[in-house]
Image 1 (cartoon, helix red, strand yellow):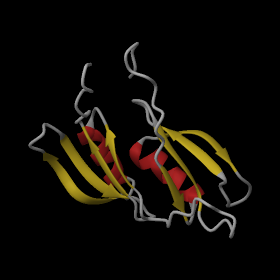
Image 2 (cartoon, rainbow, N blue to C red; image 1 turned 90 degrees about the horizontal axis):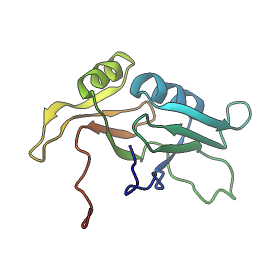
Image 3 (cartoon, rainbow, N blue to C red; image 1 turned 30 degrees about the vertical axis):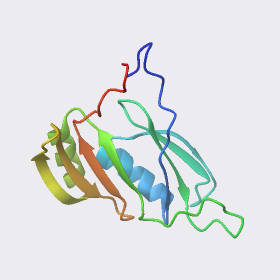
Length: 138
């Protein structure tokens, strides 16, 4: 959520996938991302944006798009922390959709209630209630 002091998100984590269309479907079903746009033909995804309901989102595309591809992150090497409101419901949703839960629900010493999971491509996702510390002067 933004206000007059908080600019809209301008940092977009990005990842690549061996099967980008399947990963998009999984991220929507398991974690609750919203498919905003997908460009590409057939199995190939040139660019996709998935929005997070609380703000921000990710961008992704298919791996192995040729020798001129300058953004060739290996699939399965991505990791992100995502702020969520109802972490327990999200945990249950993710587990039901087949996400590999790698860290069960827990409370941290910095005040977060969170869990971690891997998607089918091997990327690591941590979901929790910790929203970060305010910027100096805020």
